[in-house]
Amino acid sequence: MRVISGKYRGKPLFAPEGMAVRPTIDRVKESIFNVIQFNIAQSRFVDLFTGTGSMGIEAISRGASEVIFSDIAKSSLDCTKANLKGIDGNYKILNRDYRETLNSIVGSVDFIFVDAPFALDCINEITKIVKAKNLLKENGYIIYEHDVEKKYDLSYDFFIEKRKTFGKVVVDYIAITKSVCAVTGSFDPITVGHLDVIEQAAENYDRVLVLVAQNEDKKAFFTLKQRADVVKAAVQDLSNVSVDYTDGFVFEYLNDKKIGIIVRGYRTEQDYLYEQDMAKYNKEHGNVETVLYKATNKYEDVSSTKVRTALENGENIRTFVPKYANNLIVKIFKENLKKW
Image 1 (cartoon, rainbow, N blue to C red):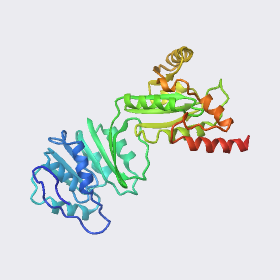
Image 2 (cartoon, rainbow, N blue to C red):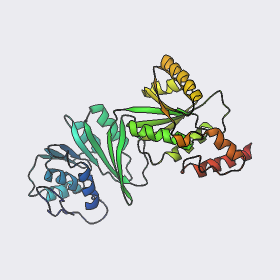
Image 3 (tube, rainbow, N blue to C red):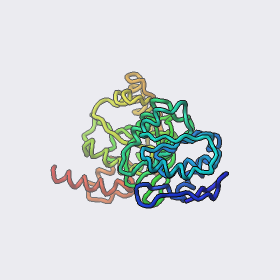
Image 4 (cartoon, helix red, strand yellow):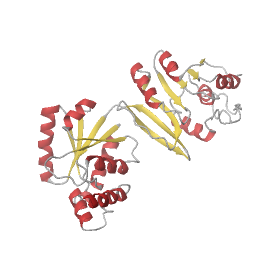
């Protein structure tokens, strides 16, 4: 383990034997600093579960104006202090719990590096403190290194702007949400056309909520939860997209979540006129704006009705539904068929 670049490039760093401390490997560290390389100089950097101090020392070497090293384990801080010998810079070493450290910081910071023990679920508590204290600068990141198996949901105040995977390790770059929308519909079930709209929204907004809703004018093929589970499977590669469902008014749910924009897709002129009426209703009743996306030409003839008909006729639905959703849709349909 070494300092990769900057003033102290090549300096060897000590790491204790065993698994009590799991330092970020050089390949991952180099990738992280490549992502933030143009913003690290004169930045404030927090190495929250410091371990060996490797990440904070790299930040100092690359010109960070201040680094805060924090760890609850004295042995980790002893290792960090040993590695800091010969290093000049503006830094603090805090023997504190991560919550105490975050709450003690005055002003805002550019980067908070979180490499917590993989078994510790702390990221939501961290973001909660960061939000309450307005701790992260507008273009800063919480850089979260975690096991590939870890699943978590962020509040709508934050989103994963970038995600990089290194074998069993994932690094998420969590930023402050500047724009959020909801893609709403009955999704009975989700089609490739629906996914196209969701993907467009994910490109245009920091956070996207796919909200599965009940349409009282239509008899549902799948339950709300089944539809939501299928949508979750379909969007699993979209890190800034989350999924929920409601059997109430959409505008009431969105008002509660403080989401002021609905994104909807339409295929035909008749669809467009219907969506205009719905947009007017949601604006008048919930002060929620609607943005309409025209269906991509190749998806104009795809609909949930076509998928349901194909299922009933025992036909293949692969060309109609997202790849990750196909098997789950067929499985749920067969299970429901037994109940019917």
